[in-house]
Every structure is written in C-alpha cells, then in structure tokens.
Image 1 (spheres, rainbow, N blue to C red):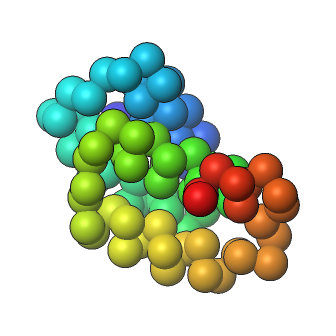
Image 2 (cartoon, rainbow, N blue to C red):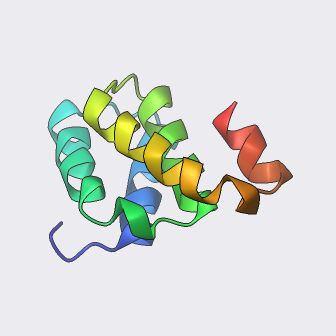
Length: 87
C-alpha cells in the first residue's frame, strides 16, 4: 500500500466496508497508509474514508484524529453529498 494515493486508500476502504468486509489487518494497514497523505485527501476522500472505517467498526483514533484535522482545513469545500456521508 505504500504506493497508494489518497483516492486509492479511500476507494479501497469504501469498497471493503460496502461489502461488509471488516478485516482488521486490512483496515489497520489502510489506516497507516492514510495517515501519510491525509493532508492531500479531498473532501470526498475524507468523507468516504471516515464512513468506511465507521461502517466497518474500525475505530482507529489516530486515523480519525488525522481525518478531523484534514477536514477542518477544507470544510468550506464540502458539498451536500460529502456532508451527508459524514453524518
């Protein structure tokens, strides 16, 4: 996953959560990979990543803290769909 960019991380987490896959080692690896480029995530990637981890029951406090910090920087760019995804 070292070559994954923000979109690849977000899409992978979303895909596994969508099908109900809650593989803890996979989500732990995604959380580690996400923290590297989290500042590069766009609002949709932030929302999808947060949704995926929450849906899969993966409560990685460090990742969620990084997502919050990144979201605070670009909250003005969130559209209705992105806001709904984070609810």
